Length: 275
Image (cartoon, rainbow, N blue to C red; front, side):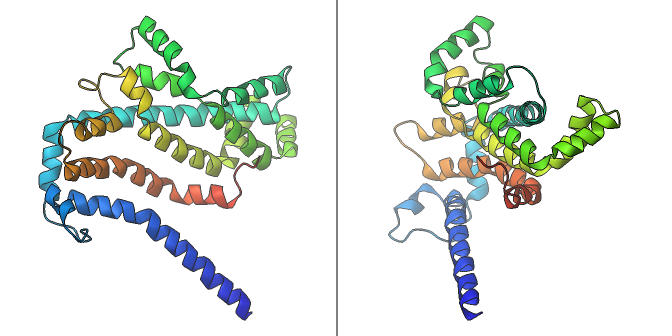
């Protein structure tokens, strides 16, 4: 019993240490964003907030069009997240619980696309965007990310584990169509895993920098990450402004995590998909 209690204390101590190590960079960014740039030159690093936060926030919005960047990132990340969760849930349900010719081969092709580095498709994708007249528009960033191989794989595994085949057979005997089986049986069963996928997809789309930098005009239609790169460029970098913008930029991700926290934890505790 004593050994079990000691093991529990050690586990909670490790979890506390990991939690503090994870939260500290966010806290330190907030501290620096509440001070001026000279605070970083002090011998002792600042650990307590200062009084320049609102001044730095005003300076960020005066330096770059951060409202537009936040709006663009919310549109892109929100659309990509909703599309990935919906489409990959439908595809995962089909691959896991429906029988049709070529199902396994098609699934292997989908998984195979995840092995191709994204950088290899940049030039062809850029040419397609140019042909469609989407350069500088949000469609160029949204459409390529509407669904991904990882999302399909994740939801396929979730459907295999969370939806018993006997339950679907009982629904078919009662006269349920495939659409009703998906909406009334599959969707409620895979909500925790869908919440995990939504969180991962939103963070990935929100933090994407490489493709938005290529496909969008940084001066006219930036995302948050592109706006941050503009604050970091130049002969002199004001780290207090840059970290103020970074702190503002992480708020939507934190808000989404708080909103989905219970379902995300449930999805993780249920094991979510296993390979």
